[in-house]
Length: 121
Image 1 (cartoon, rainbow, N blue to C red):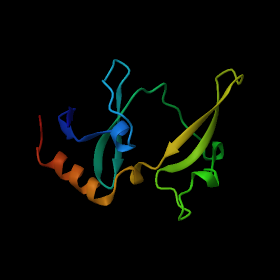
Image 2: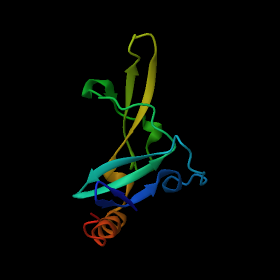
Image 3: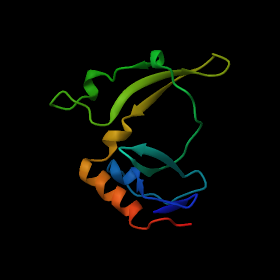
Image 4: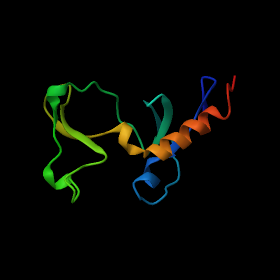
């Protein structure tokens, strides 16, 4: 849990969420604040290179191999192709569904955790 501008925000380590090994936080570790279903929460990530606007036409559907056996994909919203400022390089960025990173019960628990502290100011 963090205090951001006098608002208590619950946070979740994305490494642990996706079954990766826990790692020590560094100066590159960041918390991405997102808002889902009237709940603000933070996602701890290893690093953030930059924040960019992505246009709908830059996004394509995830490949079928990214689907599970039921033909669904819980986390992956799409794949964006982004060009560098000088248009010399192209990179691929995976886009996640912020609303699907957490199950309903987890989202409810995080929401209550943030509300349980009231105003931190």
